[in-house]
Image 1 (tube, one colour):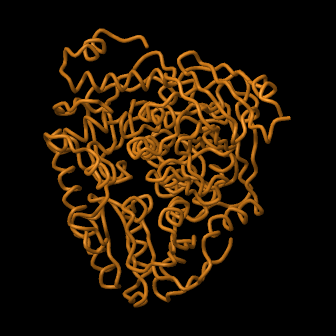
Image 2 (tube, rainbow over the protein chains, first blue to last red; image 1 turned 90 degrees about the vertical axis):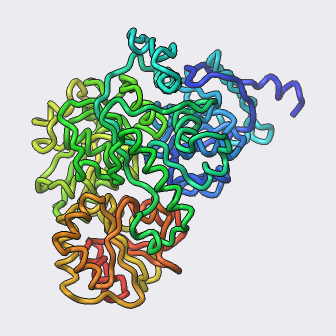
Image 3 (cartoon, one colour; image 1 turned 90 degrees about the horizontal axis):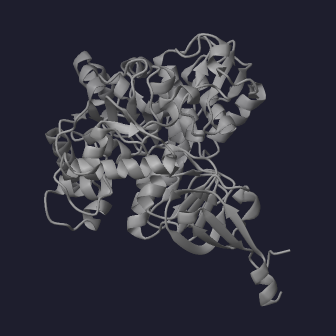
Length: 149
Length: 428
């Protein structure tokens, strides 16, 4: 695939700012909600929940795309400590607003967006390059070449 | 967000730095949620200022250690502020170690020191140090309609569903800020329109024992995620302990923060009342096949039938459960290769000690512990490989966190494993 064709294939989504800022990086996508406390090892940013499709995978320095948060009220604490440990995601894109994920995004201090005009789980795949401009509520997706149609 | 004059005054620093930093965090949080205003809260439960070895090492700032952690971590402030006494009824939930039995738990003196320093800091602020995931069993029972700001998913679901008080699943940072300001975003479960059922669970098999209720809760959480279910069916009216295990399980496998049971929970006098304006609800059926599948899921991390650890008291045991355990032990001795730990609150253990229950368990070879549990404290007896648990919540977390095997069954199955060293639980 040529450079031009890749560049043309930028998909743009609009949503609502949760936490402001701009960041870009490789996407890590899951269709399963994420448990914080008891579901994540914050020292490595790795998902540890039994039976989770991302078990053993680290979200450190990735744009994490997920339906939302579940489980313990320690969610924000775990992701807060991930920020301190340097293993937090670069940005967050999610569908379902909850107090857990709202507070978690706030204390991670990473650009975060929800309420997008298309389901990000349908549009974004792991490995895609994603730019999150939370200040303007814009997500830009460049499909990973090996996956693009 | 639309702020009152009093809230603006806090945000502008007229009440001092701590109030300002707390309000700044709450405004960031409220805006993230999309909340329009705050609600006054009169009951806050969190884990304020609690430190751990990671945070101790991370924050090298000079000054009072409790203020340092409370400012930089709890309030997510970039500067250290002097934290004043809390302004509303506030309590500390579970902690990391039992101060009397920390050596049994395998804690290091450093962990005890951090824990006790945090406790002293909380006391200085006027925070009630209940040290339990079940504040409603230790003297903090919110009233119907009371706006609360609680952490601990199992306590949150109990608060909303059983007591009819109102709280979201708050986090450490939001509760610590609410203790100072008495404010929390007016969003989610504080609002009438958010509290109606969106999903229906048809219960088609008998649900009676604690184990039955734990399995049903786990199924419900897996089915509805973070939505609000209404349970319909021919189940026996659950008591406090069954609600405790049902809600804890549903909050762990999913994110259930409130449930309705028609004719049982206070906001569901009728099926229609539970639904409110919702007319189209998705329905799940809990029958024999679903029960069987849930049991298998909960036992997916059990392989070896040689059990070396039995943990009871998740969420923290009520006195009735401690009485039941004593009855099952019947003056016998547990197997020499097994450790039996029963976790509860300080309040319940104080009574258990006085009534002689703690001694019965000790004489059988077990121990009653407070403040924490194996998952929260990340504490297991030495060389634990296989645990037996009567809590769907604990079996959800413990194998994942500690990398051990675990069986799920009834309290009697677990005590049987403690006595024989063998798992003999049977599927329902």
